[in-house]
Every structure is written in structure tokens, then in C-alpha cells.
Length: 518
Image 1 (cartoon, one colour):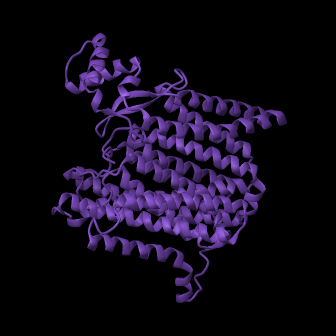
Image 2 (cartoon, one colour; image 1 turned 30 degrees about the horizontal axis):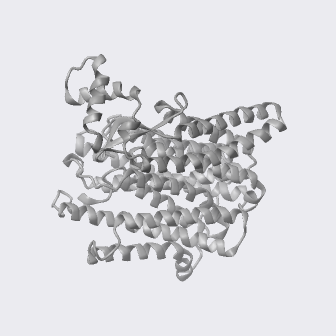
Image 3 (cartoon, one colour; image 1 turned 135 degrees about the vertical axis):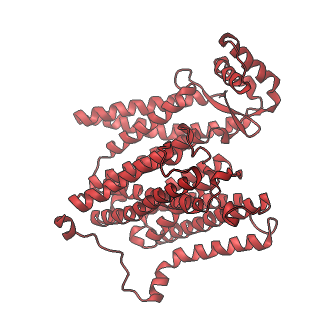
């Protein structure tokens, strides 16, 4: 303990500045927030036809975040003042549009329901009714944290690591759809805005800490091959999930069929997508085997071919995404592309929905007849498989970032400050995230007691949030009590964010519970 105290991390720089100097220092953060407030007030007073709607503002935020990610990553390799400033400006613009869109949704939700009086008045419509606005808040939390950090030029590298992830998350949000949901009366509590807002902002800070942990490992000399192995394993996880629907066993990929806006447990095969996915899976698997071989034997030839296959997977994965989206939009008759193997499980689901006892041998016929009767009502859309498409997009970004950073590693490392600075900044971000995650658990328990009469029920989302909190608690405990720093702390931060992602997205789609509405 005494050793850890003697090695205190430096506190935030700039406390000795005068008030005008502090304001000037924070101007890149305050200006976009002030402009966002102006946008929200303009929408409130001008009405829906007098100003931009939430979807347009969110799209502008996505364009800004993509621009910021490209510019800040490029700035890691090409040192130009214009890129440096433009990266800060585009990040600030994204924060402005992101926050204003999030808050405009508040107004739109109230207008959609006629501002009915609830037990909490206008708080009833606070934009946290489903996973879409939660994700808007998640992106805002990550972007505003990034902006606070990168306003100092020496920390501009943080944006190159966090903004690509923010881009993926916001893209996934838009795939989820921005329909406004009416919450069950039991959830209509003034604790909801506090609890869920803290969650979204806290998770955003955790995202930035993940980027810093990655930066530390890169700066500290962790082999590029180790990062490639990690991404390859992530790729196997993504395609292992997608593989349940045909890849690689049938070399085809099926998109979920929509009935109106409802996603059915039925898939239509997309022409050409499956073989491309199988090729990506083969390239990733082969590169993984060769990377492991090189790791054990220091085989230069194996390493060279492993990187060739890994980088070819980047191109193939990009082609997969383009082809997938194009085919979803071009297939006009989904029923004609449904494989026969889909019908038994779909018929069983139909029988359950109709509460009828259908013999197993007749369930496939039931499913096929239903499809024939409703052919004209069926459609495909990119929003029918948002989590899968988000996983495929995340894999592409991960492959691309590791490929770029490994090829230009010296330039990337030289653009970063010292290990001590990165480690200190990582500690500060986790020190902000941990209290937010603590408040998340406390406010959630109080809300649960008000709604369901108990503080804790071991719901899947509650357990996920608790485990993520324990990971960050472990980060701080080992650092303060045992003096852990460097790689060991970075690994804790990586683990914590992985658990945050699972709690935010995985639990919502994979594990049923009281938080299924989100």
C-alpha cells in the first residue's frame, strides 16, 4: 500500500490556470454542447417541420464520427496540423449532433404520445425507452470523453483508437431502428432517467479506457502477432455465431425475414454471401494457425504468410459487408430463397404461437403453407439482423485497424506519448468509470425496489453489470493496494470493456430477463 501511495499518478493538469484560461482550455468541449442546446431549443420552438428530426441529426453524427475516425487514424501516420485540427473539429461536430439528436428524440417521444401526464411528467419521455436511445447515449458518453481528452494535442492519438469503435456502435444503433416505444407502467419511474443515463455515460468512458489499454499494449511492445491472434479469435466467435445459419456447413448465409417490422425466426439465403463468408473464415483460420506456429517456432515464412492471409481477410470482409447489404436490398421475393431446412423449426414456432398441438411431422408443412399464404407481406432489411451485421462490421474494423497499425507500427508508436502518460490516463478514465458503474448498480437497485418490490433479483442484466463492475474494481484494487501498473492493468481494462459490451448487447439479445425491453 505504501509503495502505491509513493507512486501517485499525476493529477489533472491545468488546475493552476485562471478562470478565462480554463474556459479557453475547455472551449472545444463547451462549444459543441452549447450549440447542441441551441439545436434542441430550436426544435422545441420551431416544431417538427421547422427543424431537423432526430434521425437526420443522428446521421450527421455518424458522418462526423466516420470522418473523425478516418482523419485521426490517418494523422497517426501523416503528421499534419490541418489533420490534427480537423480531427478535433469533426469529433466536436459529432458530439454536437449526437447529443442534440438524443435530446430531440425526447421531444419527439412526447409529441408522439401527446405529452400525457404520467407520474413523472416530462421525465416519462426521457429518451431511454429501448436499446436504440441507450446506444445514442453510449456513443455520446464515449465521444464526449474522447473530446475532453483529445483537446490536448499530445493525446490526439486516443481518438484514433476510440472513434472507430464509436462509429461501429452508432452504426449498429441505426440498424436497430429508431421506433419509439411505450414503456410498461411499472417502469414509469423518475429513477429511470438517472439509472440509464449513468449507464450510458459510464459505458462510454469504459470504451475510451479500452482504447487506452490497447494503446498501452501497443506502445509497450506487445507483438503485433498477439493482437492479430486476438482479432482472429474474435472473428471465429463472430462466424461461429453466424455459422448457426449456414456458414460454413452449407456455404450460405440467411438474413432474417420480416413481416412488417417484426423479425420472424425464418431466414432467406442471400446469393453469393455464404461463399464469401466461408472464404473469410478460411483466411482467418489459416492465419491463426500460422501465427500460432510462428509464435512457437519463430518461423519467418509462417509469419509472412499469416500476415498475407490476415490482410486478405480485411479485403474479403469488406466485400462481404458490401455484398450482404446489396443482396438484402435486391432480393424482392424472400420466400423463394428460404431453404427447406428452415421450415420444421419455423412450423414449430408457429404452432407454439397459435397454441395448437401440431405433430412434429406436420410442422414443416405448416411453416411452408404459412409462407406461401403470406409471400407478399414478407421482406428483407438490414435491420432484421442488427447484432450479426454489427458483429461483422466490428470484425472488419478490428481487422483493418490491426493490419494498419502492424504495417506502420513505428509511426503509430512514435505518435503516442510515454508509457507513463498512457498508463496515467488509463487510470484516470477508469477512476471516472468506476463511480459511474457503482451509481449504476445503486440507482438500479432503488428503481427495482420501487417497481418490483426487491432491490436485487439476479436478473441477467443485473448480473452482467455486477461482473463488469467487479472487473473495474479489480483494476483499482490491484493498482492501489498492490501497485499493479502497465500491462496487468491494461488487461483488466480490456476484460472490463468486454464484459460491458456483453452486458449492453449480448444480454439484451441472448438472455431473457426483466431488461428485455431494452
